[in-house]
Image (cartoon, rainbow, N blue to C red; front, side, top):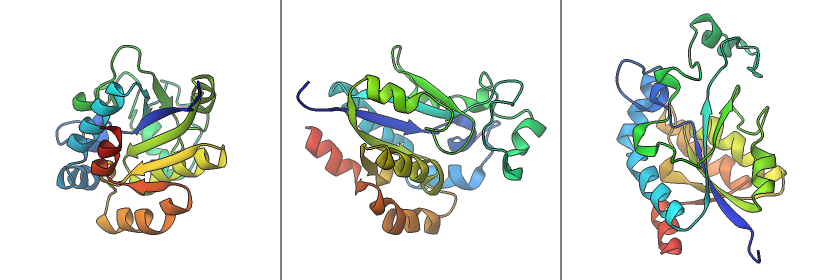
Amino acid sequence: MTHPRKALLLLDYQVALCEEGPHLRMPPLAAQVAERDVLATAEKVLGSARDAGWLVVHVRLAFDPSYVLRTNRLARFDAYPDQRAMLADSPEAQIVKALAPLPGEPVVDKGCVDPFVGTPLLSVLAAEGVGEVVLGGVATNLVVESAARHASDAGLQVTVVEDMCASFRPDFHEFSVQNMLPLFATVTSSDELLAALA
């Protein structure tokens, strides 16, 4: 291969985080996802990435029944085992229908914020010859920022699609996009990305 391959990493687009309804755990986040039309934007980018032959990787927060594989042991993560929440096979942990993985698209389950910690993600990207990752997800200042930092430190080129992201509060998103993410990634819009792919 002359050019390193690109991968689209879809980060935590899960029912519990993005969808109004009985399984919603994070109402402020879902409200921002809806207001910013994040899922429709992500769906467009996903379709184009598939057409372009990019590796598509879905990442989600999901736990085994023991919760021992949860690498984040901070008190704020204790709610998950206490409430038996986000079990891997539960409805709330599933990826939203609009962005559902196709057969052959890997799904990486993580037990913390950073999708590279405790998962085979970095090894998989290396094995697939990926040199650049394109990120979208929720929340901007959590998983997206963690992924951008880790990927750039691991030697990957990183692009963040700003309108595929949302956080619990608009100011959290804006601060991350304007001040933090540019240190680790190229921040772009879906329109710019799709124009380059066309």
